[in-house]
Length: 195
Image 1 (tube, rainbow, N blue to C red):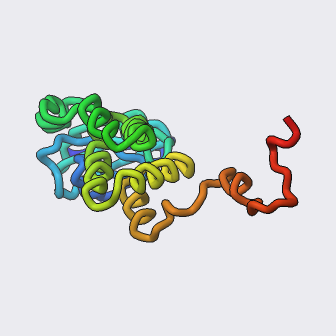
Image 2: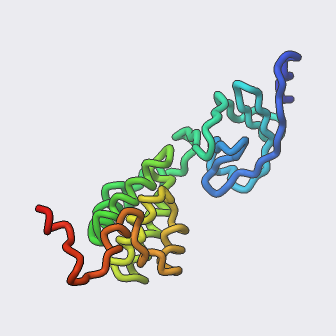
């Protein structure tokens, strides 16, 4: 079956994206799901102002209302592999419970990672990576790096790993410098003097 013709007044762009490991194709910095069995295949994509259609060997396999939300996902549950649907072993609750053993900042980071995804399962890989960092680094350092990641809204495993590797977790967060700015000295009264 050939792709449907575009009405003459409707402009369409064509692309040939490859299906990534998360079973999505990218178009205009937005990700649209296809069945997970198509991972690695190159497909045809036609986009108009209102729709995105995905074709495989001339047959339309999916059609979406076009989204202009950058770096977000449009995912249909029927495209997910069974492991993502069932998630018997890994659930958001189980990950949060594991994170609580490291500390509240790690819990906040994992919550932010999963909340930033269309489906929490899309954040599981990053969450597990953050949790594995607690095997390499002391929990206090992972907590500080998690606090930095939440503060700067960098909700990725890579950013937390980089902070730890480069000792950025040792730096004070903005706002903490003011508390540490004054050295202890006999001529400085401090905040308690005025209360």
